[in-house]
Length: 101
Image (cartoon, rainbow, N blue to C red; front, side):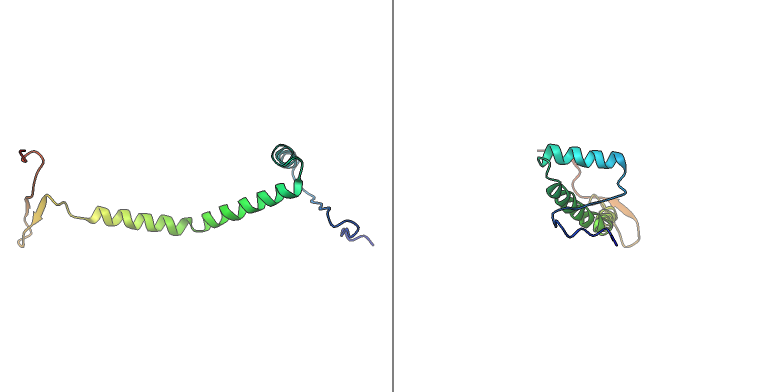
């Protein structure tokens, strides 16, 4: 019985059901960048995938943190405006137009 496992040569690695265009792109990439070393090419692709996966898994957290920081900046009061106890707002502080050198 042949169950698809090759024990004769441990250096062989067969992958089936790859779309033709993808297979051609991987072969061309391995030929150009890795001197036809398909194993090193697959290792590079896998390592790059792991980096991108880590990056995108943390993307939601990073975006939420950025949104939180931006929303806090929007809530900061204008320093040129003072709110009195009565609730009335008064323009105050140094205004660039009123400052003389």
